[in-house]
Image (cartoon, rainbow, N blue to C red; front, side, top):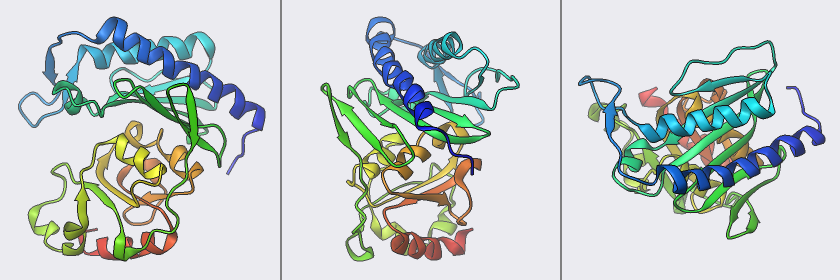
Length: 267
């Protein structure tokens, strides 16, 4: 795996640090008002999108293109910008649009910077909560709030007996399949709040997060943060998470292996 220079981490993390603050200001100045909701699936399910989703992505694309005009951009709402650069930005303008439309403050802006397809910097910005999560190297990440920063570290001493699990199946796992993983159903004591659950995991507040049907913009920005905080992140069949899909992150290898074994009947 290609490693980036410390100077590159510094340059790009500084950009994302500034961008997080710009995004929060942009929301309160321009987007904190009544809005209409459209359904991208048009009656074949429910996948909401708002003008705020579009406005956030346009804003992020403009900031990235102004600063790094040769870089590629991959976003949820608009066509990909393809170039010859090895650098690409992956954008989820609003992760948790369902939360956004009902006024739940747990939604976020997710952005990753990838090199040759692999995410090495990630930002999870929560405008309403006025905090954001960002890794500044491969092994250091912080949560920023009230002009202060706190280093992120998973609960590496977590054990199966007292594990704190957050899970969300989003209708992707049938009831019949769920019956095959009773241990997980019993341990699902904490709700899954999209990127906020992964962020809380990186703070050591949760020990396991399980989610289904992720797209790359849902998980790429979170992978570098999770790993920099000491966490393990894979698919449910223990593969590289960069292709997204069903994701598990764990505070240590012992509980990661145990949960992978429990999940086998539904893979």
